[in-house]
Image (cartoon, rainbow, N blue to C red; front, side, top):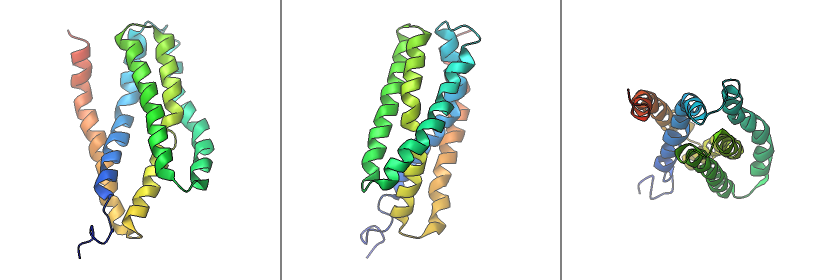
Length: 167
């Protein structure tokens, strides 16, 4: 019987995908967000404050949601809910920039997004350890996909920013 048929490692590829997206997003959010906030017309002094909303939200919401997730019998449901919250915030931030709604609307999207991304990394780690069923020697291979995502975004980000700001 194969490992997948036996239930061992069946969801590891899905988790590798989570790492590509989550860690890849880390590579893009600060530099690209700063450009978006500047393009939205924020005063120079406000740009780092809006960018700081992300780590501030993570710092505050991480322990709060972490305790709730730890006490939950369904951490996967929390992951879907928090990713959804982050997606709504990201969409609001994108819409504010795309439709020129101003930097306050962009900041609102960032503020909504930040608590949603706070516990995602820990939830993914726990889910992966559950999927590996104690075989922690395979964790590095799954986690490697996060590094691939980070490097991919860092390689593509300059082209995306140049496309956004034609010469």
